[in-house]
Length: 491
Image (cartoon, rainbow, N blue to C red; front, side, top):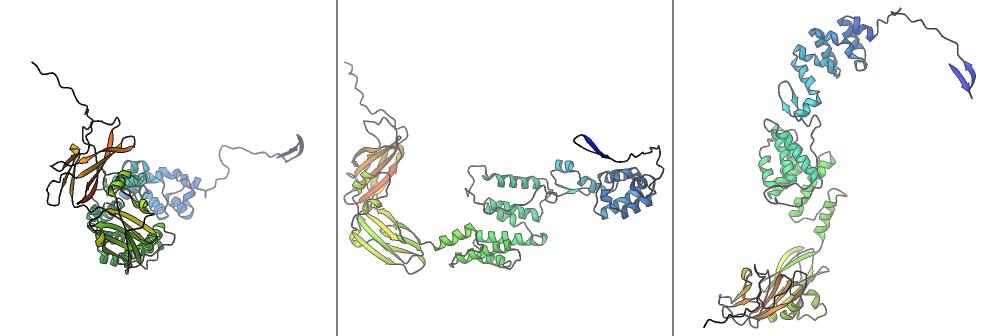
């Protein structure tokens, strides 16, 4: 040892002399290096039992493994201590030891990969889940954009689910026969794709007494029961696990029970705090809302969480409103500052329900805008008091007008607007139906330089009301309607 500072020697240790010999003068007969090479089989086994075999170079004793008896003793000892050594286990091929051969082959990832980690054989059994080559995944939430297949080929738009599902198919395709657990997994992944009918078929092949995942079995069963509207069966399966010690599963079954309660008229609940879907569902269930449609000469009102509604009626000049907006039949804003011709206030007793409200007698037979207001919202629907039958013959660019008995109506006024390809809306033509009740809404002798995309057609009768239709231009309508001069007749 030498110590220096700034290239000046400060101190130095004494010199030592070592004598090098060809053979050791003293041998450590208790070391692994000695026993593995020179000890007896019993001494080697005793050393392995006494010391930490995991830290030894076991390749040193490999030459001894040609002795079958020694091989069996060593593999039994290491197996009991959960120690695997590739060199030792490879001698199973020499001794034709089936058990150890299977253990040796199972440790070869290259072979397992070539077999896609799936094999059932007396010598070697590979399980993809056990080898972590495949594992089931939970998707929460998973919202599919399409409920039905687009075209002949079914597509899984979510790329992660697509890869996961095909990984499952890759495993199942190499199984000699699907067992009950396999069919349960198939059921789960079909439900993720909203393929309920197919999921019902696969779930029917699962025998409950042949699987260990009874919790997942009951969850799929409850979900499928709800899909079949078997609420009693769904509640029975979900109630079994409402006291489950694992929060995630207990809440999953609680959500099913809460949805069943809500379907039967009870208030919506949030079983899992912070769950956006459940909280949104509860808020939606408490949201005041209504829907309205016209049923003949009556208004059909459907509502929830409302106690009153107001209906206002405005008599319309259909031709004027159509001329202002021929392609968007939303006239509510145009009546905002006009006094209604009639107002009806309705008390809604039930929390939710449906009611049919007839038009006032004084307004029957008139074209009326019906505006419904409730819960801070309003909707407006036009009611056309038309008893005519109007057929649009799009292939020929004509409308056919008949009365209720099917008789053609002549001299019925028709007004047409066109929407051009550049987005412009302009007056196209007007006129009256002929004795056949027909009117050509498309043809004009002054064709537009820009193609027509749609036609808005108003059919108006002084006695039978009005009807508005939206029509496409007839096929091959791009024609030249300019007059052609006649040729001089031959003398």
